[in-house]
Image (tube, rainbow, N blue to C red; front, side):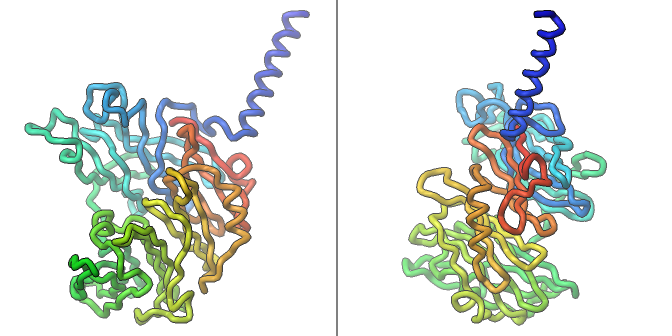
Length: 392
């Protein structure tokens, strides 16, 4: 066999292997692979359709106390990272703040949101032990950290925490705001005698004065408000439809240690809409695990809820779709169950009529999927509906 023939055969084999990997969804699209795994915390879509994912980028076995555990004496690192993906799916770029730039390590990213100046990322950073004269355990060294990433200039800048009322808030066109929060004016006691508040919908003027307050009866009176307050209502959401009313999404633990996920609707005057679900309430029943659940409203008025459920940790990601009147969309649910084969945590948002899901594979790879209205993978996104990023 000639040398030229051997080289041709080698090239053919390499190309075939590349095609096989592409068909399996392996590799990084649009960027050279790095050496850090990425754990997604939130996903947002820009006006141009581009996608930004915020989370932590880990090098090495960060959770191993012998390796590092953020004490600076091991090779592991955990950075704050933003991954840019084009509207059609290819990976465009990765931006991060290293432990040196953070003066510590990024324990977790809690949430990310777009404003007029960029992507605001809220995180928890654990300070390096050398910065603290009398250090205690790791938890005593953790502080809130906020930064803003400008996707046009590709730069991080200092930022102030976003002002929010309660667990979720939505601004109205006239300047008023509607929030869902623990109402101190309605304090009560649980069956066990523990003092707790009532979770209410509250409409306020721009200056902060209250217009009305309505208890959210859709949320169980057995809700553990102390735990909800500690988590800051992460994943809770409010949506306002000028014709149908105020939609809300909440997930919480009860004092009896049950996980409940509810979707509800109130009228625009704040009173529960009894025509929706079971007297204004739709209890989404699954064997939910503790952790953040997500909800998003689509352009057609439907809603999609996502979270982790199952019999064993970490569980599987469940997606459930409902109409604006609370009717389930089982065709979407069944197709999504087949398409979304990855592990929590989950990022969820919408891109026009499509649903974007971000999660992780067992090997630590980042997976971004785009689902159509039928719950199936959208073949025009990434490779056959999915983008897989092995390392960043």
